[in-house]
Image (spheres, rainbow, N blue to C red):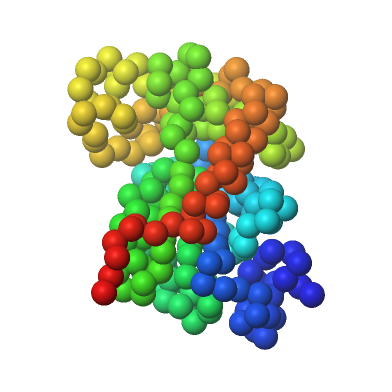
Length: 257
């Protein structure tokens, strides 16, 4: 039976009605195709989203969770990198409506729980808004997860793109796609010097990756290693698998007449 793979798209149409239930958790990876400096491939966010989601589904299934992997979204809201060649991006409205259309399609199956695992920061706000839209319009239980950037020791808390953590994870997952000879540090020292304005401070700001460097790198990949990447990746898998039980049974608590 194809359902043994836990891959949604591998099910036959007959199996959709028997393998899935209202408490099945569908996992949707969202990545991007965009420049990650001269040392990482444009597929970085897509690779991480797919590999992380697959690992979560596989480990979750082994732990007894009714969890299914959906095909990843590759072309998403990446226009903060649009000035760099190779970026393939959709408008915010296109990405948002794609998520809504996917939700509308899920309603045609028995499943009613959707977990989006996002590996591209530019998608985060839209994923959150879409999750509420899917809850309101279709009655789906919607969940979303993305890891906060893990800054490296030299990044002053600002390793958000193609830096220490992301490069380490790619060295773990796809070392054949990483060229450390071209890894160079670009630390956003000016931004780090502000007390109130920053990526995680009281006041946020709109930005383009080329505001910080010609390559779009925001961080220091030079100290990245596959060993660090393996730890970061496995810790995230463990964290998400631990959450699956609550995702499968989540109820806001209101008693409805």
